[in-house]
Image (tube, rainbow, N blue to C red; front, side, top):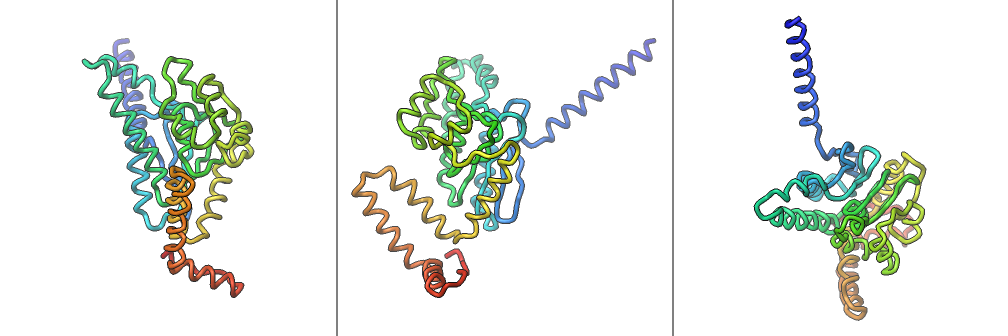
Length: 287
């Protein structure tokens, strides 16, 4: 009898060790390469891919690798499981209230590092597409809004629900308010309501709504279309887009006129215009 109990305990312990090892071995962000397109997949499905500090740090590092990879011309951000991203990891945040400063230092570091990660998407000199298959809420909606483009499944939902728990979605508001109109942004922020993918499309938060479980394929098709262009031209255009919209009208025209002059002197602009005139396919050199 004792032998049976010892064996049962051993089997239980072995199973626990295997489970822990499997969990420890599973990367929280996966990378897939599809020719010139990299896909980063959030891989905390059991936590609805919430942005723990570890997830934020890993995403930041992976985006930097994509930035420096000359073989990658576009990036897709997707997620495993039923939720695209549930925002910040509330369990982790709540646990840090036990710190001597009630979590202030941790919260400050986390929100600032999250903002840095979002900005790394904007500053990435390559197009970034969100492929949203599930719910994107709070900082998850911020992640979608921070991407240059977004393709959403018909089953996807979006929300900035912080107001429901006494924590206004102030940092998600930055990206959201730069994607949709003031009235639509304020409605999402003040009510915290979930909106379906079709409504997100109508207000400009996503570009396309597609059949369930096809969002990655559709995002890849879109990325491949974009990567057929000159990478040098895309880099110039993305940077100019985000810089000019923060300027007043006159300054924006002055700045973009300078950008276009420099762009005209690039080798790919010369080649592209010549190919257009000669009715042939351009041969890009990405310079």
